[in-house]
Image 1: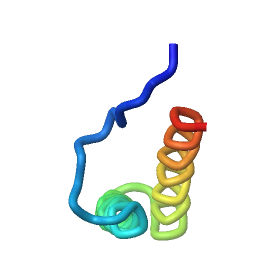
Image 2 (image 1 turned 180 degrees about the vertical axis):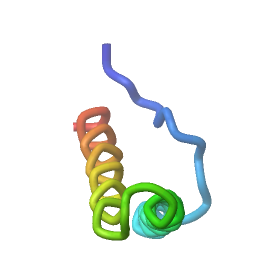
Image 3 (image 1 turned 30 degrees about the horizontal axis):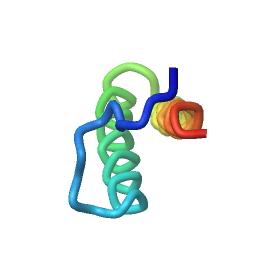
Image 4 (image 1 turned 135 degrees about the vertical axis):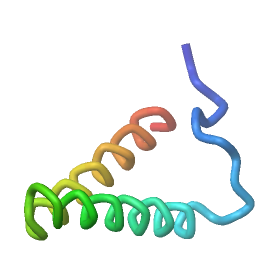
Length: 63
């Protein structure tokens, strides 16, 4: 079954802006958790990993 509609809510911004917002949001969350538990490097790695998951899911859904 081909998925024509995005599972994410529609946004008025172009994909690059929403991707920037998502990466910024995950970076802030990752950094806040990182300061408390993991450490800065692990937090940045976690946010980058989450961004890769988002990109993979997006390309898998539409590709």
